[in-house]
Image 1 (cartoon, rainbow over the protein chains, first blue to last red):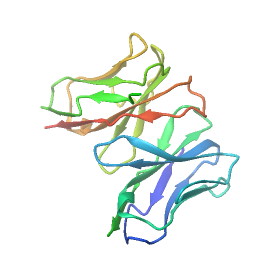
Image 2 (image 1 turned 180 degrees about the horizontal axis):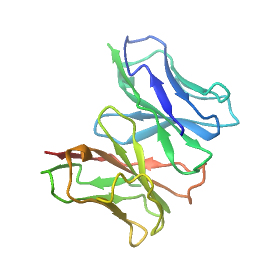
Image 3 (image 1 turned 90 degrees about the horizontal axis):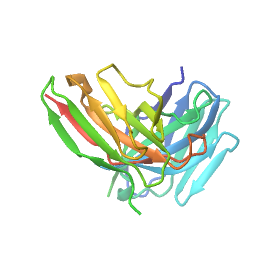
Image 4 (image 1 turned 60 degrees about the vertical axis):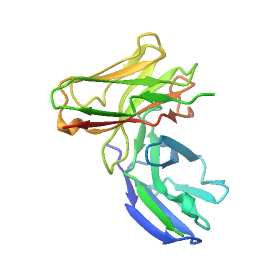
Length: 113
Length: 116
Protein backbone atom coordinates (compact mmCIF):
# COMPACT_ATOMS: atom_id res chain seq x y z
CA UNK A 1 0.00 0.00 0.00
CA UNK A 2 1.33 3.40 -1.02
CA UNK A 3 2.26 5.66 1.88
CA UNK A 4 3.13 9.34 1.61
CA UNK A 5 5.08 11.06 4.38
CA UNK A 6 5.91 14.74 4.81
CA UNK A 7 8.66 16.09 6.98
CA UNK A 8 8.71 18.34 8.91
CA UNK A 9 5.14 18.50 10.19
CA UNK A 10 5.61 22.17 11.04
CA UNK A 11 8.17 24.81 10.20
CA UNK A 12 8.66 28.40 11.34
CA UNK A 13 11.14 30.63 9.51
CA UNK A 14 11.91 34.35 9.35
CA UNK A 15 10.90 36.25 6.26
CA UNK A 16 13.39 36.07 3.41
CA UNK A 17 14.72 32.58 4.11
CA UNK A 18 14.90 29.90 1.46
CA UNK A 19 13.33 26.65 2.60
CA UNK A 20 12.76 23.06 1.54
CA UNK A 21 9.75 20.89 2.25
CA UNK A 22 10.10 17.14 1.91
CA UNK A 23 7.76 14.43 0.69
CA UNK A 24 8.55 10.73 0.50
CA UNK A 25 6.56 7.82 -0.88
CA UNK A 26 6.95 4.06 -0.66
CA UNK A 27 5.93 2.89 -4.15
CA UNK A 28 7.66 4.42 -7.16
CA UNK A 29 4.92 3.30 -9.58
CA UNK A 30 3.25 6.68 -9.88
CA UNK A 31 1.69 8.73 -12.66
CA UNK A 32 2.49 12.10 -11.17
CA UNK A 33 3.05 14.04 -7.97
CA UNK A 34 1.45 17.34 -7.08
CA UNK A 35 2.07 20.00 -4.46
CA UNK A 36 -0.93 21.83 -3.00
CA UNK A 37 -1.34 24.78 -0.70
CA UNK A 38 -4.15 24.82 1.88
CA UNK A 39 -5.21 27.98 3.67
CA UNK A 40 -7.54 27.79 6.70
CA UNK A 41 -11.17 27.59 5.64
CA UNK A 42 -10.29 27.36 1.98
CA UNK A 43 -9.91 24.61 -0.54
CA UNK A 44 -6.69 23.20 -1.88
CA UNK A 45 -4.82 25.22 -4.47
CA UNK A 46 -2.57 23.32 -6.86
CA UNK A 47 0.94 24.77 -7.00
CA UNK A 48 2.99 22.42 -9.16
CA UNK A 49 2.40 19.11 -10.92
CA UNK A 50 5.29 16.85 -11.92
CA UNK A 51 4.67 13.98 -14.30
CA UNK A 52 6.55 10.76 -13.58
CA UNK A 53 8.81 11.34 -16.60
CA UNK A 54 9.85 14.79 -15.36
CA UNK A 55 12.47 15.72 -12.80
CA UNK A 56 11.30 19.18 -11.78
CA UNK A 57 8.82 21.99 -12.31
CA UNK A 58 9.16 25.69 -11.53
CA UNK A 59 6.66 28.46 -10.95
CA UNK A 60 7.90 31.80 -9.75
CA UNK A 61 9.64 31.35 -6.40
CA UNK A 62 8.62 27.69 -6.22
CA UNK A 63 10.56 24.73 -7.52
CA UNK A 64 9.49 21.12 -7.11
CA UNK A 65 11.70 18.14 -7.85
CA UNK A 66 10.91 14.46 -8.20
CA UNK A 67 13.19 11.46 -7.77
CA UNK A 68 11.05 8.39 -8.37
CA UNK A 69 13.82 5.90 -7.78
CA UNK A 70 14.39 7.13 -4.25
CA UNK A 71 10.71 7.89 -3.61
CA UNK A 72 11.26 11.54 -2.84
CA UNK A 73 10.03 14.97 -3.84
CA UNK A 74 11.02 18.37 -2.53
CA UNK A 75 9.36 21.76 -2.72
CA UNK A 76 11.81 24.62 -2.62
CA UNK A 77 10.50 28.09 -1.72
CA UNK A 78 12.85 30.96 -2.38
CA UNK A 79 12.85 34.23 -0.44
CA UNK A 80 9.89 33.27 1.73
CA UNK A 81 7.22 35.86 2.54
CA UNK A 82 4.56 36.02 5.29
CA UNK A 83 1.94 35.38 2.60
CA UNK A 84 3.51 31.96 2.06
CA UNK A 85 2.23 30.88 5.48
CA UNK A 86 -0.09 27.93 4.88
CA UNK A 87 -0.15 24.13 4.97
CA UNK A 88 1.61 22.48 2.05
CA UNK A 89 0.44 19.05 0.94
CA UNK A 90 1.99 16.66 -1.50
CA UNK A 91 -0.21 14.17 -3.29
CA UNK A 92 0.36 11.54 -5.93
CA UNK A 93 -1.55 9.32 -8.28
CA UNK A 94 -0.36 5.73 -8.13
CA UNK A 95 -0.51 3.46 -11.13
CA UNK A 96 -3.15 1.34 -9.45
CA UNK A 97 -5.62 4.23 -9.84
CA UNK A 98 -5.45 7.05 -12.37
CA UNK A 99 -7.89 9.27 -10.47
CA UNK A 100 -7.30 8.76 -6.75
CA UNK A 101 -5.05 11.32 -5.07
CA UNK A 102 -3.02 9.99 -2.12
CA UNK A 103 -1.97 12.76 0.22
CA UNK A 104 0.71 13.25 2.82
CA UNK A 105 -0.26 14.80 6.13
CA UNK A 106 1.20 18.16 5.22
CA UNK A 107 3.75 20.67 6.49
CA UNK A 108 2.41 23.73 8.33
CA UNK A 109 4.59 26.68 7.37
CA UNK A 110 4.77 29.95 9.28
CA UNK A 111 6.85 32.76 7.82
CA UNK A 112 7.49 35.40 10.49
CA UNK A 113 7.73 39.06 9.43
CA UNK B 1 -16.46 31.23 -13.62
CA UNK B 2 -17.52 29.77 -10.31
CA UNK B 3 -15.40 27.14 -8.68
CA UNK B 4 -16.52 24.14 -6.66
CA UNK B 5 -18.90 25.15 -3.90
CA UNK B 6 -19.93 23.22 -0.82
CA UNK B 7 -22.66 23.72 1.72
CA UNK B 8 -22.99 24.06 4.57
CA UNK B 9 -19.51 25.32 5.35
CA UNK B 10 -19.88 24.28 8.99
CA UNK B 11 -22.13 21.66 10.52
CA UNK B 12 -22.50 20.69 14.15
CA UNK B 13 -24.39 17.49 14.82
CA UNK B 14 -25.24 15.56 17.94
CA UNK B 15 -24.06 11.98 18.00
CA UNK B 16 -26.62 9.80 16.29
CA UNK B 17 -28.01 12.47 13.98
CA UNK B 18 -28.02 12.15 10.20
CA UNK B 19 -26.29 14.83 8.11
CA UNK B 20 -26.22 15.69 4.41
CA UNK B 21 -23.37 17.59 2.79
CA UNK B 22 -23.77 19.16 -0.62
CA UNK B 23 -21.27 19.70 -3.42
CA UNK B 24 -21.80 21.81 -6.53
CA UNK B 25 -19.03 20.98 -8.99
CA UNK B 26 -17.75 23.22 -11.75
CA UNK B 27 -20.31 23.25 -14.54
CA UNK B 28 -19.59 20.61 -17.16
CA UNK B 29 -17.17 18.62 -15.04
CA UNK B 30 -17.67 14.92 -15.55
CA UNK B 31 -15.82 13.59 -12.52
CA UNK B 32 -16.56 14.28 -8.88
CA UNK B 33 -14.64 13.17 -5.80
CA UNK B 34 -15.19 13.24 -2.05
CA UNK B 35 -12.31 13.27 0.43
CA UNK B 36 -12.25 13.27 4.23
CA UNK B 37 -9.62 15.29 6.09
CA UNK B 38 -9.18 14.65 9.79
CA UNK B 39 -7.53 17.32 11.94
CA UNK B 40 -3.80 17.51 11.25
CA UNK B 41 -3.96 14.93 8.47
CA UNK B 42 -4.05 14.99 4.70
CA UNK B 43 -7.26 14.34 2.79
CA UNK B 44 -8.25 10.71 2.26
CA UNK B 45 -10.23 9.48 -0.72
CA UNK B 46 -13.82 8.46 -0.08
CA UNK B 47 -15.59 8.01 -3.40
CA UNK B 48 -15.58 8.85 -7.12
CA UNK B 49 -18.37 9.58 -9.59
CA UNK B 50 -18.22 9.74 -13.34
CA UNK B 51 -21.40 11.57 -14.31
CA UNK B 52 -24.11 9.87 -12.25
CA UNK B 53 -22.27 6.56 -11.91
CA UNK B 54 -20.44 5.87 -8.66
CA UNK B 55 -17.41 4.02 -9.95
CA UNK B 56 -15.44 3.73 -6.73
CA UNK B 57 -16.68 3.82 -3.16
CA UNK B 58 -13.78 1.93 -1.66
CA UNK B 59 -12.84 4.75 0.71
CA UNK B 60 -16.18 5.08 2.48
CA UNK B 61 -15.42 4.18 6.12
CA UNK B 62 -18.63 2.32 6.87
CA UNK B 63 -22.11 1.61 5.57
CA UNK B 64 -23.27 4.73 7.44
CA UNK B 65 -21.73 6.77 4.62
CA UNK B 66 -23.65 7.14 1.39
CA UNK B 67 -23.03 9.37 -1.61
CA UNK B 68 -25.11 10.12 -4.66
CA UNK B 69 -25.04 12.23 -7.80
CA UNK B 70 -28.38 11.43 -9.39
CA UNK B 71 -28.27 13.85 -12.34
CA UNK B 72 -24.55 13.88 -12.88
CA UNK B 73 -24.08 17.33 -11.42
CA UNK B 74 -24.72 18.12 -7.74
CA UNK B 75 -23.61 15.49 -5.28
CA UNK B 76 -24.66 14.78 -1.71
CA UNK B 77 -22.67 12.92 0.91
CA UNK B 78 -24.92 11.55 3.62
CA UNK B 79 -23.75 10.25 6.97
CA UNK B 80 -26.23 8.35 9.06
CA UNK B 81 -26.10 8.01 12.85
CA UNK B 82 -23.05 10.25 13.13
CA UNK B 83 -20.25 9.30 15.51
CA UNK B 84 -17.55 11.47 17.05
CA UNK B 85 -14.93 9.89 14.79
CA UNK B 86 -16.83 11.31 11.79
CA UNK B 87 -15.69 14.82 12.81
CA UNK B 88 -13.55 16.08 9.94
CA UNK B 89 -13.49 18.40 6.96
CA UNK B 90 -15.21 16.87 3.95
CA UNK B 91 -13.74 18.09 0.68
CA UNK B 92 -15.33 17.81 -2.72
CA UNK B 93 -13.37 18.04 -5.96
CA UNK B 94 -14.33 17.93 -9.60
CA UNK B 95 -12.46 17.44 -12.85
CA UNK B 96 -13.34 17.94 -16.48
CA UNK B 97 -12.24 14.56 -17.76
CA UNK B 98 -13.11 10.97 -17.06
CA UNK B 99 -10.51 10.18 -14.45
CA UNK B 100 -7.31 10.10 -16.46
CA UNK B 101 -4.07 10.61 -14.60
CA UNK B 102 -3.61 13.98 -16.29
CA UNK B 103 -6.98 15.34 -15.13
CA UNK B 104 -6.70 18.24 -12.71
CA UNK B 105 -8.95 18.09 -9.65
CA UNK B 106 -10.36 21.40 -8.42
CA UNK B 107 -11.26 21.46 -4.77
CA UNK B 108 -14.06 23.19 -2.91
CA UNK B 109 -13.60 24.93 0.47
CA UNK B 110 -14.90 21.94 2.40
CA UNK B 111 -17.55 21.35 5.03
CA UNK B 112 -16.28 21.15 8.60
CA UNK B 113 -18.38 18.60 10.47
CA UNK B 114 -18.23 18.49 14.25
CA UNK B 115 -20.06 15.68 16.03
CA UNK B 116 -20.70 16.30 19.72
